[in-house]
Length: 81
Image (cartoon, rainbow, N blue to C red):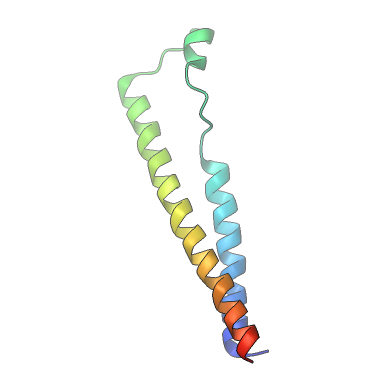
């Protein structure tokens, strides 16, 4: 194994774990459930949830791009070595 293959393999493992964690931390899209159960959200808590979800969605995209680039890099290294 090449040193670059080991490094890219480690990056793949780290990105896979990061993607799993970030996806698990995101909330589902169940809007209107609080109205049915009688729970009322304040304006601050609604905006806070949106900002956290937006933050997690952004990082999910970043981790996914790095993951795909690492997979492509590994395939290129495997092809040419």
